[in-house]
Length: 309
Image (cartoon, rainbow, N blue to C red):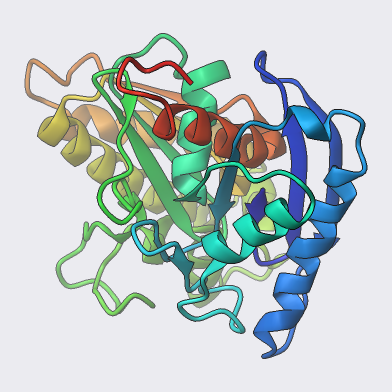
C-alpha cells in the first residue's frame, strides 16, 4: 500500500519485484478520517478480487508522514483528516476481512523509497546509502550495514528537516533553515518568485525550464537548492559513512539543472577522506518506488532472525 496526499495505491508485489493488480483511489479531501479509510478499504477490496490474493504473505504500508511505526499511527501533513490515525491496525483488519490475516508493517514514504532503491534500484549492492525524495517536501531513509534502518518510530533518515542555515527562514516543522525550506519544489518556486522571477509556469518545473534556458534567477534558485542538499548529504555521510546518495522525486527530474550544482557544492562539504568518494545519483524506480518499497520493507522488517522473509 502507498498512501499519499493525492492518491492511495495498492498492488501485489512478487518476489522478483514485479507488480500486478495495481489499483488506486484519489485521496479524499475534507476532515472525515473514515472517508480516507474507506478509500484504503476499496483498494484492499480491489486487490482481494485478484486470483493471486490467496498467495499474499505480508503487507507493507508506506505513508506520507509523520508516521509512528511503533504505534502504527500516521499524521500526514498532506492528509488533514488523519491525526494519530491507527492505519496499521485498520488496514490489517481490512486484510483479514478479505481472508488475508497476514502480518503488516508501517513505514514512512521516504523509508519505502529507500527500501525500493536498495532492492532493485540505484542503491542495489550498496551496504550504506542515503535515499531521498525531493518533491513538494524532502524526505529520505537510510541503509546501514546492508539493512534498512527506519529507527524506532520509522522516521530515521528524514533529511528534509536537518538545518543547513542557522539564520534561515522558519520551516513548517517548527525549525529554522531546514533543507525542505530551501530545496523542496515549493521552496524553489517561492524563492525564485521572491527574487522577481515571473515565468509562465510558477512551479519548480517552470523554474527548471527557465534555468535550462539560462535565466539567472532560476539558475540561482537551483544552485541554492543544490547547495542545501549537498550540505545535508555530506553531514549525513560524515555521521554514518554512507557512500552513495540516491535522489528521486519531482525536483530530481530537473536532471543536471539540480545535480550539477549539487555535485559541485558537495566537493566543498564532503572533504574528509572517508567521504570524498561520495556519489550522488538519480533514483531509477520512479512512481513505482512507493509500492515496491513498501513490499521490500515488509519482507525485510518482518523477516525472521536469520533474515529469511
